[in-house]
Amino acid sequence: MPDMLVKLYELPKLDSIMRAMEEKEVTIRLGIPPEKHLVLDWIREHFGEGWASEADVAFGNKPSTIYLAVDNKTERLVGFACFEATYKCFFGPTGVHPDYRGKDIGKALLLASLHGLARLGYGYGVIGGAGPVDFYKKTAGAIEIPNSVPGVYRGMLRKEAKAIG
Image: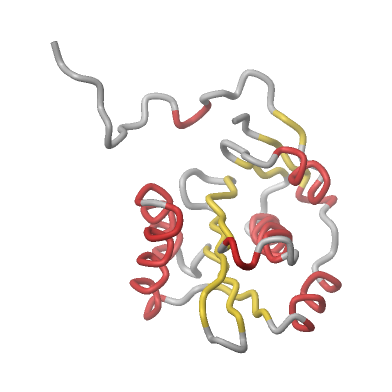
């Protein structure tokens, strides 16, 4: 999966997507420390330990750099997106519960996070190891960074390490 580059100074405005979330009774907001353990457990359960580790870092930033999507009817977490977690100027990881996909929640989380990077003073943002490349192109005008696989994750320790000897 390639890394992608986004012009943060040409992002779509947030107003309409946030209104759409309100109409669907979904709140997009920054996470706060007292809920960190709940969010990390949810991420670990649905997306794995690696993403939970990156989200842990996002909670440690002040203010936090993790957006949460909360279903207002059930008061449950349904998605998340991190920025400025793994590396400076990076977006990700992000995930939406399977039952809530296709409702523009991922789009809202992405755009909120990219606007967060812009507020930090960056002109460009990087989407690390972008899975849904076409989604990022369409939603944020992202372009693939040539020769960026495996990118910054090269040589990262994995649970299933190679045998010694």
